[in-house]
Length: 113
Length: 113
Image (cartoon, each protein chain N blue to C red):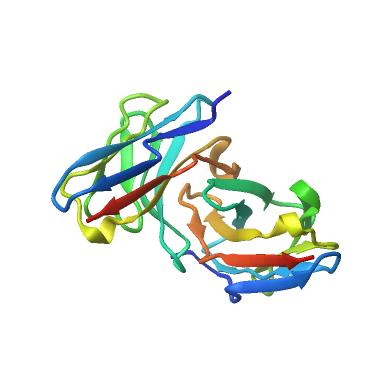
C-alpha cells in the first residue's frame, strides 16, 4: 500500500517556466488537497477537491491550477513559475468525511530561480 | 474563518522530562482537532485527533492531548520525552462541516540527552 505518492521530489525551475506536480493515492479517498509549506508559516491550503470533477480554491490559490479527472490523481499545475512559489509542496488525502485525518505525501521541494 | 495559534516557535526539554506543546484554535461551531509531526525532509505524520467524547485523547508514540472547549485549546503532551521526539509539530483544526484543514505555524521540539 503506497499511500500518497508525489513526484518529483525535487525540481528547479526558471522564472516563467511551467510544470505539473503529480499526486496519486491508492486509498480510494474522495478528498484530496495541496498545501505549501514555508518557514514560520505552517502549511497553507492551495486547492482542494471533494471528489472527481470537483475542485475549489484554498487560502493561496493564485498562480496554481488543479483538476481531478479520477479519484486517484490530483495534479497541481504552475503555469508561469515565480520566485515566490519557491516552497515545499505537500499533497494529502482524507477519508471518512470531515472527521478523518489527512495522509500526506513526502513532498516536492521546488526552487524557482 | 478558522485559525490555529502555536505560541511557541521552539520547545526545549531534557530527555525523561514531560513535554508540552501548546495550541489554541478558532473555528465556527464544533471543532475537529489534529496533531501532526514532521521529521526532517519528510511528510507529515498523524499523531492523534479529537472528534468528540473524552477530552483526553491518546495517540501514537505515547503522545496525548487534552481538549479544553472553554479555553479553545488542544495542547499536546508526553509524560517522558525521548531524544527521538525531536521534530516539528503541527496543530490543525477543521470545522465539522468543512473539509478544509487549517494549520498552525508549527513548534520545533528539541529533546536533549
